[in-house]
Length: 315
Length: 207
Image (tube, rainbow over all chains, first blue to last red; front, side):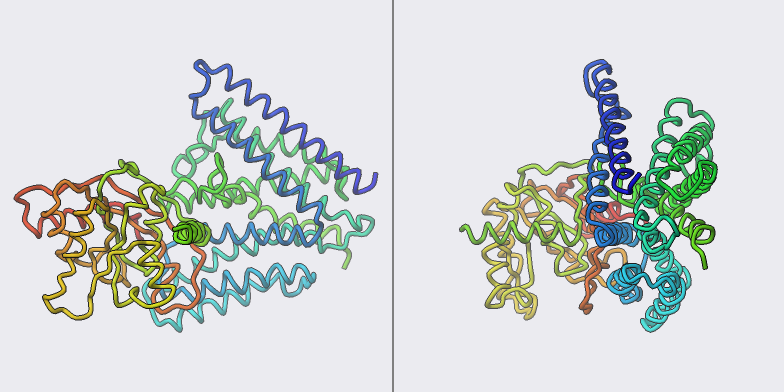
């Protein structure tokens, strides 16, 4: 099968899934007495509608190739960083460090991925941003809660730029026998992790009883977690034909990124609770902000990248 | 007339694009009643955001109160404040009693317009709220039927702090609080305190 054919099958499958979901949402809505009204069903339908838009954007990026993918994820990083910093307490002394993050480190990170300079894009934010941003903050001479503020700015950049940029960075990995197909790795990662979120939501709504941690996330249940991770691990194994992995390997990798994805949502929920908000923003109807949709990807992308790089890319 | 309308459209579009401004109406609605919107003052762009957050029918009858020293300049700035925003310009520089700044605001209220003003009087570089100036008390006393609406602006001062050349693309929110009214017999201090704490209540927790 050529990469083109694999991509066609994959997107046809996603299209079919969305059609089924939309139809199911419409049926649920009609069967509710009095037409509309149930907030759960309205939210479900809003989410499905947003999925159409998300799939259209991702599909377009696939058509535009590497540049399209880098622009799409650069935009996603920008939006996430904007949401993150908007909700984080900073002071005037952080202004230059934040401007550096938005206007220098973010574009530079994606540029380095574009020119495939692994040696620098893998350390740009953990080393250079980590050292230079606190220098600018210290130059502003405001010591109030200095360490906390420096840590927050670094965290924002790590999660929203560094971690998320590992999705398009998958395009830079030279895998023998898989040349020209790396975009399918992005499809695998995004599909498996997002489906895990969807199935955790669905299983949680259907069977959820025992909350994982009511303090952090009132909607995450043990039943949803186990059901969602198991379902999307099976789907990941079933998608082995678009990857360089065997079915067993694909399943094991899917399990790893599903667990990381779950904890990504979990950790970012802890930050939201600390800030007293439910969502990171209001960009995507039914989902909240961009970061609400990307939290799981941000934790799973670097791990996925390094698993593939360690075992599938020869030295 | 079309030029002013075009400018208003462009400014509102830009304000939303750059600041992602989101208006939240808490126990209140954008109704066509005569009102004084009062907010926390952190940036020169403050009234632009409040003004753009109102529906266009209300916007046409709502005038921002602005400092003549900054805005009353020939060219674009003067055109915007006089023709597009229809601002009520007050002279803050010389304190001679000849130019009563309250007079122009009273005229605007007597004409049936709503006002946007910032009772702190000056841009607040720190957190929280400065003391309120007495002007809003005199306006409310003279026009007790006018509704007072607190508006908390979050993040605009952080996106565009005074003296900084590079704005940050932060998301701003405007929280419109419930209507307050002048209560006859209330002292000036009590009135200003009541308004100030109503505005502070709309602020998100700062930790």
